[in-house]
Amino acid sequence: MDLKFEPVSPLDYFASLVQSDEHFPLLEAAASLAQDEEPDLDVQHVLDDVERLLKKVKARLPEDADELTRLAILAQVFYKDMGFGVNANDFYAPENSYLQEVLRTRRGLPIALAVIWLELAQGLGLHAQGISFPGHFLVKVALEGGLVVLDPLTGESLGLDNLAERLGPYRDDVDWAAGADLDSGETPLGLYLQACPPRDLLARMLRNLKEVFRAQEDWPRMLAVLDRLVVLLPEVWTERRDRGLVHAELGHMQDALHDLQVYLGAEPSAPDQAALKVRLRELSGDAPA
Image 1 (cartoon, rainbow, N blue to C red):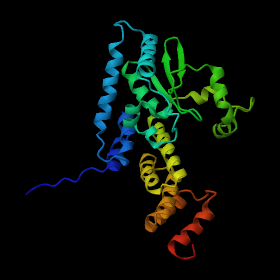
Image 2 (image 1 turned 60 degrees about the vertical axis):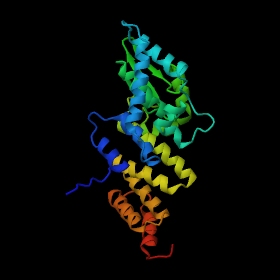
Image 3 (image 1 turned 180 degrees about the horizontal axis):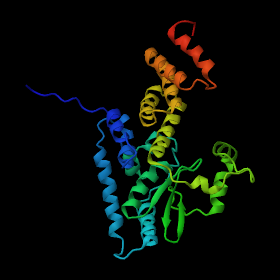
Image 4 (image 1 turned 90 degrees about the vertical axis):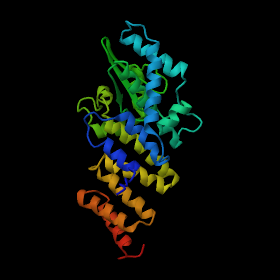
């Protein structure tokens, strides 16, 4: 008897990658996001491209290169020789989040560049991590002489004054969210430099795509992103709510009802409870839409 094997769907593959926070394969999971656009994308080819880039950086290192030298040579190869940077002509293009396109064009969003840069830095033995800084994703490297915070778009090292200036436009919102210091009225800058866990980094990449497709009212592509967010963050109920609303836009009434009911049950005190209950009655046919 011939055995038939069903191909693994992009979403199932993604789910297998993100099921545990232990040894979270950030680069592979981030590369897999583009499979919603290109189901036949060879993720391993993307990983191999990054490995080849790492070998190129290592070939430039002196045998006794210290941490600062490794960091400097990585910056030289990544930003100067290879020319990685921002896609200023079309900053909000979804391709700026897809790693195979970022590697091909050498243009992308800060967070997409950061994923590749972090893989290279860690491959060089540097203690590098992402920072989910408001407005613009950053990276940091812990060196023997202290902490270095960098802009992944340019490799520029950012001092405290520069970081405070970048945080300024977001101060009111982020201080309120983080819980401002009672004496100063502001949350210490250092709290915004905490390491970003890989799961949170991936969620930020997906939310960037979510907002792009929301602005375009591209509901099928937004739904694919929300499917991944629900898998990645199963207890972040607002993502389930948003997926229900997108299902409704697409006419998937049973799926919409299910997601919205799950959200309402999980968040009984949410401020949008009344509005969503009205929407549920509309979707179920109990009231005119």
